[in-house]
Length: 162
Image 1 (tube, rainbow, N blue to C red):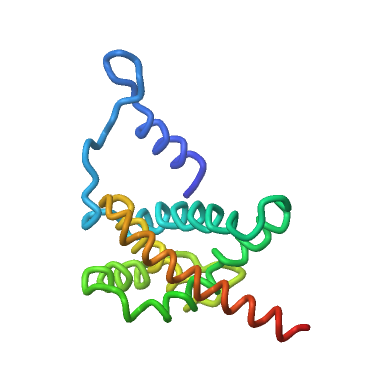
Image 2 (cartoon, rainbow, N blue to C red):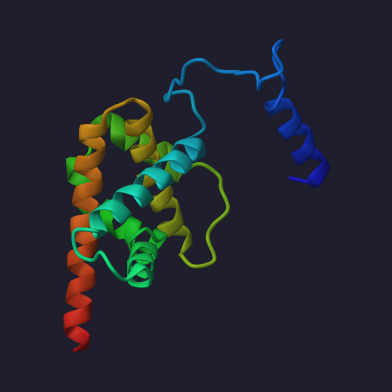
């Protein structure tokens, strides 16, 4: 998006209401109609927050270590691998969300393969949909299963290195 287009879209988004406050454009969120990349945007934030909170069970002093591990865990590479392991537990509706987001046209990451990036987008879209629909129990169930898998795989790799 060019800068002028960006400025125009931002001005449209931040339109004042009669009282001069930012006008609310949408009252409800219908996750079935949202762009799958918007769902992934929300899901990415959910997973980051969940991972950071869960890592406090293992370390509470070294913020650098916490950050490095969190970044590794939430990477497209690990999300894609985790998504393959949790595929069996996904409902039909969650599988539809995954496919819709995975297949949506987007720019691939420089640090992940095309396949990894698109799978991680599908994973994040599921999380975003669950969060926006208020199904926090299911959200945390999926996040927990994914994190459990990733943590065990990272631990195995660490043990193998010595």
